[in-house]
Every structure is written in C-alpha cells, then in structure tokens.
Image (tube, rainbow, N blue to C red; front, top):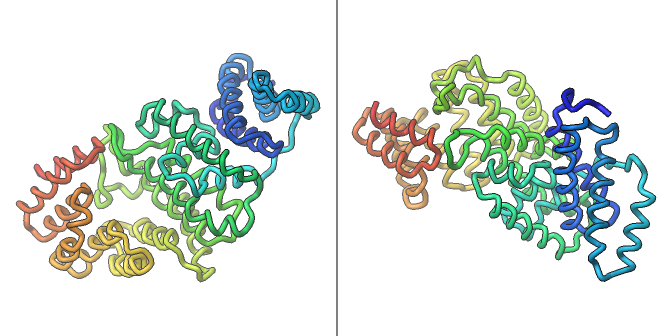
Length: 403
C-alpha cells in the first residue's frame, strides 16, 4: 500500500473510477446501478485512501467495494434468485479484475446516447467517464448539485430503458454517434476555455477534462481524421491559456497577448495532428477550425496574422456549416482583408439571428474601432457588456467602451 502523500488521490480516483465502472458493466450489471455503486465506492475510497494510503490494486479495490454496495442494494430486492446469483458471482471475483482498453470508448458512446440532449449528456459523461463527483460537476457548470443530480439520474434512466449492451461500439454505431460524442467533448472543453458565466474567464478543470476525453477518443480511433482534428483544435486553442488572463483574472484579447507565454509544445503537437489529419483528404469541421487556430498560433504577432488564409478557411467552413457564429468570426477576417465597411455589411446580415448575443455586439464594436467610428464602437461595447454573463468579459467590454 502506497502512502497517500506520494500520489494525487483525487486524480487516481478519476482514472480508476471509469475503469471500475467498465468492469461492472462488462459483468452485466445495470448501468444505473453500477454507476451509483462506483460513486459510493469513490467516496469511501477518498476517505480511506487519504487516511490509510492507496491500495496496491486500486481498481480491484473499487470494484469489490462497489460490488458490496450492489449486494447491499439487492438485499432489498424481492428477486431472490437475482440476489443469490449476484452474491455468488462476487464471491468468486478475482483480486485484480481484467480491465479492457475499450471500456473508456464504450463509456463515451454510451453516455452520448442519441436520446440525451447535451444538458444531460455532459454531466453524465463528466461523472461516468471523467470520474468527477456530482459536487465537482455542479461547481464546474455553475449549477446546483440537485440540478446536476437530477439530470444525471434522468440520463441514466434513458440509457437503462434503451437496454444498449456495454461493448466496444460497432462500426455502424461509431459512424452514427461519433458527431455527438465529439460535440459533447467540444462543449465540455469550450465551457472550460470560455466560461458561459461566473467570476472566472476560464475553468481549467473542464478544459483539461475535455482534452483528456479527446485524447481517449483519438487513441481508440487514431485513423479517423476528425478525432485528430478535434484534439488538434483543443490543443491549439488551449495553448494560449496562460496568456488569456492577467494575474488579477482580467481578459487579455488575442491582439494584446504575450505570445511568448503560449505553450509551444501543445502548438507543435496540435499542428502535427492537424497535418496528419489533412493528409487523409477527408476534411471536416474540426480540422478546419483547428487550421484556423493554427494560423493564429503560428503568427509571430497579431499584425503578421495571415488574414487572407483565415478568410479562405472561414469560407470553407461556411460552405460546410452555415452557422451564424462562424459567419461572425469570418466578419473579423473580412475586416482585415476587405476593410471595415465590408465587414459591417456582413454583420448587418446577422443582426436578426445574433442580436441577443454579446459577441455579436463586441465584434461590431471592434470593427467600428477599426473604422475610426469611436461613438458607434462605444455603443456596441456597452450593449455587449449588458448582454455578457461572464464577469471578466463584462469588465473588459466596459473598459473598451470607456477607453
């Protein structure tokens, strides 16, 4: 048994919890019951391992404690045969149960079930695959613990009713569900990279978890260009993390960031992944977004950014996915290549769909500043500040209006 002081117990539990859940599910346990039992075991482990040290076989320890929880619950079950078979099966459980490398992939695809919307799939994925507690998820998402618990409970009920077997997802299911899986991972990361609301601009735990899940997905589907594109996008975006926020927690815009603080190791890894993905000649949305992030990351300064290339990449992205937020970002590239007036004309076409979004008004302010219309820029920045729900963004926008 290792002393608790020599290991990060919480990180170990995050890694071991999903593995233990996979073992239970492969033994035929119901998803909702198994997930609850593992959560109980994780809480016991946190107290026990912190006080007494980490056992030599942490996954086996969790599995056996979770198994006892399942037996305790089934003692109240009227189905005597089910209870007796469960006790018998756990009495012959090996000390170190077999852990499959496919479990993390199977869990990801199970938690991103077609019947779940992102508001349910995200917390379930964070708990079952990420190993976070309900309290940690609630803190990260700025929601009440009861709300998160209810969403997780409903999500588990949906999966239980579906009766989907726990297995490495077959090729047809991978093809059908992969877009949803990647979207959930991206949403988890993006909430960490640019928090929707609250006092902090970023939430490192969510950003890190999104990257970890993207790595898991890429490791299992290494030849799929879009899983490479997704991981590349997250790395190329997160590489700027330390330069995006001052020590006081204020936002630092891209054009003012100290690029020497960008993580070159992450940038190089992201560019390598992107190059390999694009070489497969099956370009997707995440690869294009990663390419856009890569153009910014490779520019020595904001003034040397290749805006012509960025506009071309945004044009390709619009052709694939005509999303108003994509067009909003393209308008910035248009401002730098074709001039502010051209960008303002493009922004006018987005007013109906994005008038309630603070980034729309912030972009208008930016373009008006480029055009030398300070009064119009101030009005736009103030409107953006009123709509922003993240406090550092709100402070930045108010400062832009006053400067």
